[in-house]
Length: 143
Image 1 (tube, helix red, strand yellow):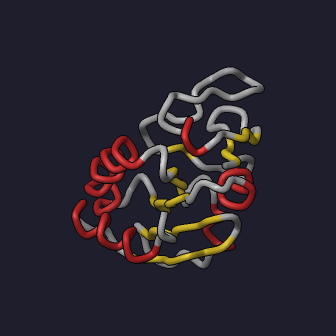
Image 2 (image 1 turned 135 degrees about the horizontal axis):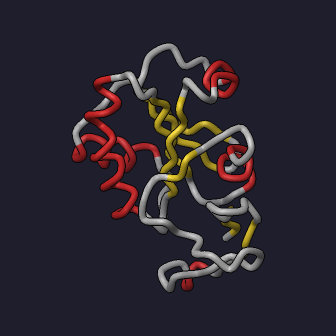
């Protein structure tokens, strides 16, 4: 599986059986999994959403948004639990306005699930952890 490094965005080929063994980037030598959401920017978005084979769940949010702040701990917890099968990333719509506009973000939080450049699903609004997990099961390709 091709996985983009969360530190340098380099692509790394990792055999499926090694995903849970703490793989490191061949370039920067840092861990390929953080156990927390990745901060997405214009600079690293394409590597994770388009080129990496690992599914990416993006939380489009803003610092002033109350529901976004309430949802953040749930999203953080899911990142710790769902890696290495899924990468979770947060995209600040205030600092990354071009990306937010590109995806037509009109309300926040908005979740979008990508795999290799394809948008698999989107959902506006925060949700409880169990609902998020159920939503992901509905939209992720069978493993």
